[in-house]
Image (cartoon, rainbow, N blue to C red; front, top):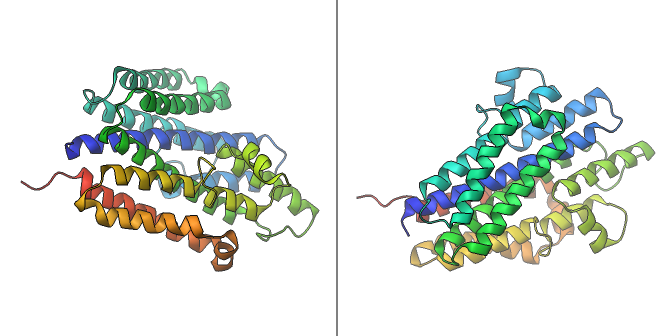
Length: 319
């Protein structure tokens, strides 16, 4: 496969996944804002939302003070924000258009229709009337895109690069979400100091679980009250949790092995080593060494794997 084609497929999937992840975070933040809370706590949540994607400096240059209206505008419809929902869906559609001949009709039409519809929703400002309904629509279109891709694409290199992009993006986002939200908890990681802190922690960690569709999964797996260390274990180490770091890296490594040859040995080694650490690690070890340090290192290593994929597969060889 031409490296240019692989590049477009890889980034088409990454941008689609990024749009969904942004919608998930915005939806949870919007739902949380409806609960009784002080203005300071609400502002802290918005600041954390911007920090997850490293967009706080860009936002402040455009708007200055953090307000719900401006954050919504910046993260949903701003063309100046490359990680806004509109920017991601536009980039996904442009990458799909560049490799139209590689995609099935169903995959192309799904991407194209999503872009046309989101333009209408933004221009009419329909999303402002019911943000949650809009976020559900974004998630649904992403689910539809993945389902159509798996259900209609030939199981060859094209599909493997698309899956690789999806799960690299997912691993990155889940790690960022855990890291930023962990720092937003004012009480101790292992337990709140008083009843008020216990209540705050419950809603805080519930919001994290809901943002990755993990609330019902947590109840099924642990059958207990929500505890921070178990939330971390679910989202980091559980291979059966679809959006966990372990599950995401497992997919990345599997698809790397399917497209790999002699050139890919270094990329496969990095991915395999990180996967092994997740497979055989324990949450007690991670917490003992520091959750923030672990997640920071994980993000660096995922970025390193993405860079290796780019160098070995997605860049044209010099003439």
